[in-house]
Image (tube, rainbow, N blue to C red; front, side, top):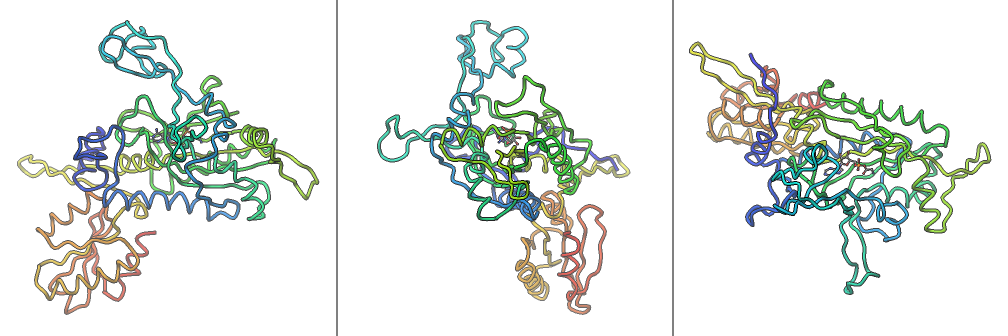
Length: 444
Ligand code: GAP
């Protein structure tokens, strides 16, 4: 059997639309650039992605979670450096009016040419701030400007003292959050890889200065293990350190966890040593002390921060890319049969089991419906009675369902069903009384 991996994003965009993972936003109006909606399966899967990350972080005894507001006091973004420094160099082509980012456009970097029409009649690069601005309240003057947050991390810094005093955690400890962020990207694209509205999963680990480099290394290893646990092909992952000129304005050191997407190696997650930059800045701008008092050693210090930051949408995309495979077999005449499988980790798969009565006869559908009701108390399951059993199996393979449960004419006699496994296609006869624990074990 030949295995074909995902060759381009277009295949995934098409599967996503056809099966209800991701739709173009406002599609009936022609769509809104770089905005996407998660459909019936996509929204379930996205919740699973978030749950995997959230439990990996907050079930530790030294990390708490928060859910901070998107809109923050505007001075937060002055203190953080985003008002002055969160910008990309923008160039206008005076011929075809294309706008593009100067710092990652090959034709511009090489020969100062427009990537669209090749013209050299271009504007000088000017800094374009990526934050979305809006106004709070009914008066749209400069005093009412607020920003849609471009990262969730600032919510962690401004709540550092609130979290430390309420949890009574001692340093080192971390704060984790999942939430929407917004960036007015000049060149969004590659499906849900780079969008203007996206979700981030960020964790700030507050440590004693001097121990930061060791924790930075520990978090690289912890994050690598996360990807291994959820079944990523390790050859599709690598860690790329940032050179001194690539570092963000707040970072002392940084690595990108990169994934080999169909369009090439690209950042999936950032791990940063943010030093004491943010807490020091917020102390300065707010006038409040953000020092930690270490009881044991009777000393005060401003903690350093190790940050892990991954986009939920980007991780979702990486899961889809990594899981997609086509199993190709040929018959005697050389005619190909292609089984499309999303080999997602069972905890990430949107649907855990499909219940398939072999016929639409009431004696089978009533049992199948009862099984559906029972399993649905615990998991997201689907009921499907339309089409041949082979076609129904294939429909589930394509959306990554780990188990198909077939109710057949023997079920009434032997009180058992056939459970078919997505990856091996192995079939087991399982007693109805054992079904729930059988599925539970298989989902671990
Ligand atoms: N707090 C640090 C921070 O925000 P970042 O490297 O700019 O660091 C972290 O962003 C992660 O957020 C990225 O690795 C990526 O997964 C995700 N991300 C950033 N910009 C994005 C965008 N425009 N669309 C989708 N995901 C994005």
